[in-house]
Image 1 (cartoon, helix red, strand yellow):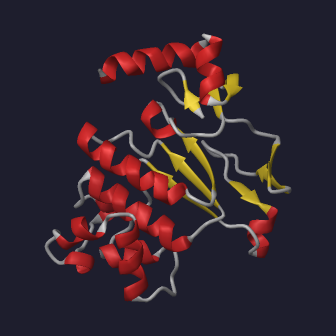
Image 2 (cartoon, one colour):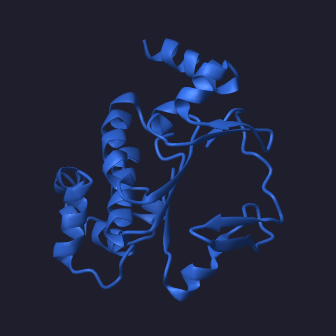
Image 3 (cartoon, rainbow, N blue to C red):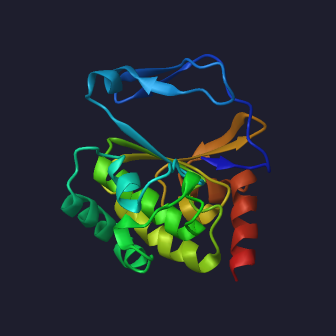
Length: 211
């Protein structure tokens, strides 16, 4: 999913998603609905969201990764960190996995927070992974490293990516371009580029900026 304008689209207050034949309904009246698949409540489908700011709480790096799987051992947490390339970054922190992250991860840099969030997603091993602006707060060097991690994290699972940066969705199977709360284009990346529409324009400008 590509957001074509510079603000978040209005959220729908009714409707449903169909995920592996499971119906997910919007049921909150807050700013952004919480979509809960029925089968997730029965344990047959689980989902993990990796937002640009993450969902960090006061505690250690170990605690925040283990949040994705509360019964995980320290060895399993460290294996998850290695799988997404976060182990070397964590090793460089003052107390490694026992480093306090502060409220909302305030004591970690943006790239460090994202890698820890990816390690949490890896250890949770969800059937559905939602990446919400996963690279929006990163510089070019950090984004390049994170993009490689995302490829590994997305492998073998359904992934919904919400992004303004095209780097994040370049390898997507299907893209929906959202403008003012509506889907204005959808198709494969190649189809959308050939169509010469909104996505093609965004793609051309992205290439020019990357050159």
